[in-house]
Length: 341
Image 1 (cartoon, rainbow, N blue to C red):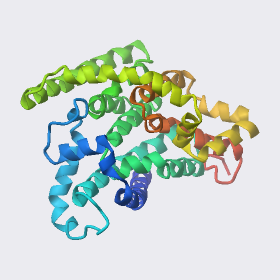
Image 2: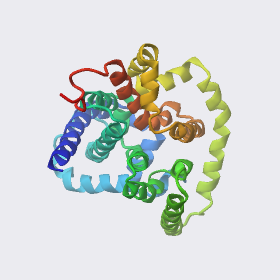
Image 3: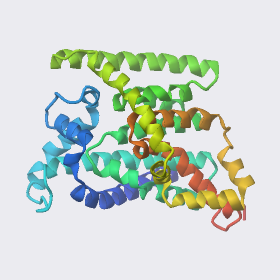
Image 4: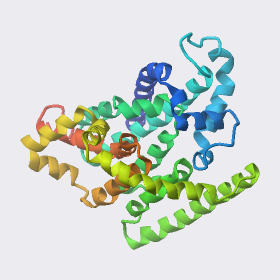
């Protein structure tokens, strides 16, 4: 138990330090004023509640960032780099919050790798691919709320695969607070025994009561109509034709490639060199996970129009493919900690 706790703490600390170090440079030079999403979340953290009809409900990350900013602003305001335009203290606070959440995500991705029987070196490759991913760094470094959404999806996947129902419940409770698109994840949650399905439906109902209660109160407090967000969500379906045109183009191929970057070559290599073992490893828990999870990812990508950023939410499983690819290529190496000596 102590060894497991040490490994967990070690992964968190290393991941946090890497994400903060790499994310800081991106935060300094990213044109935040060009992103409506970023401006909305900065506004929420600054107490400007009249935001986009959809994003105005996503208050958890902005409130956490506002709390960190309240504590650190006296120090951060004095060390603001000269080349940074905007509220450095608040943006840095977002980065700290997102770095902590994404470091926790890295722990669960590592644990999912253990469920898939990856050895320590393969799991380390998996973790490096996650921490160096373009979208990992953007979500970490910028005032965005995707880190909470990714945490909800990753804990649910871990809970399902490791049969740890607590983490499924945790995901159900925080998921709707991160993004409305969490509802598309429900088919993955309900692919289980009838006993588990009944329990999870109950959890979903309780979670729904909390989130809709908050939304109703928030609309009343802001003196806004409750149906604004619904019409805004429905209007996103109009982006599907344009998203499909982008998907089936050279740019769409780049968006797909950006999910795993050059690590994709390792997957192709494993598929070519050790196809049988590679497929056996990634399908060791059945193909149902892919048939339920990836269509959800595709639908969200088409609805958002931001293909790369939405395809990225498949990273908990695509990272597993990278780790499995490495282990299938070198299955009998001395670093296989499960091999008897």
